[in-house]
Length: 347
Image (tube, rainbow, N blue to C red; front, side):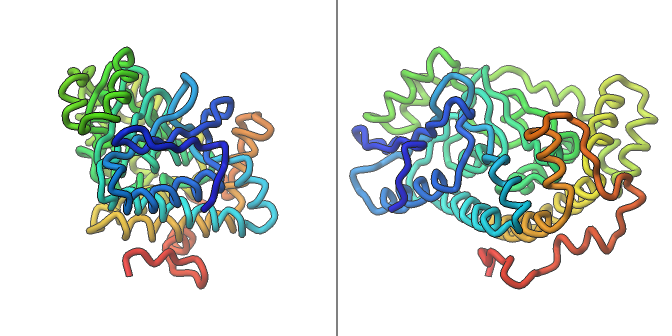
């Protein structure tokens, strides 16, 4: 079994507890952490003494900020073999969680992004607090929403998911509930009592005693212009509609989109449109694995991480630099089967 002090796992009464334990790195996921979590989940699935699994993050800033993308950057520069293995094990773990035979309670308190979303939103009980910020910010670093997130974004009401994917905007707790990324709201002051109760009672009983009415969804009031603008068939047309909208919110959205990789914007839109036809998470994870592996062979992923995390100049030099420089053939290549780069979950 894989072991690491970066994940703390223990039995506590009827609960099996998993705590991501890299608080100084906002609990960013390493490959070793993923393997340790997957191994323990597999063990607990057969352990009758464990009736509920509870996922939390150490520290007071959040559950998990995502993958250790600096490590992905360094490996991608060397050919990406380690990054491919990381993505494979990450997506397989996401799939395991989605099919877990016992209640899986994810406490999405504070920042929950990228890989942290993958470890939480496929569980059966997804809890947010007033401190929660959920995001799939992958387009900021030259990637697409992954860990099954593209399926949830594709299934969000109207075009909210398209807006969130292309802009990399964050969701407050009400938005996370609206968009299908969470199920329950528990006030931050009650979270310790809620998680402690899971050692003795079922998640339903613990929620009955601790859940409260969630804050209003901020995105709900913006549905009209979001649905109108993002229903367009291309990224270029989305931007045209946003520019013509004439509101501060639409202008800000357009600015956010224009800062992203032109290639990955087009791939992201195509991925969400295709995901709408998927019948299962397995299909989406297979698609995301093809995309992620292909991204490792193109320049924008390394460049995006360099600009955001390594040099932090926030000035990525995308290639191609403009949307009109990205061809349909280039986009289609991200979805084409590649020998050795198939997850095979959907058969």
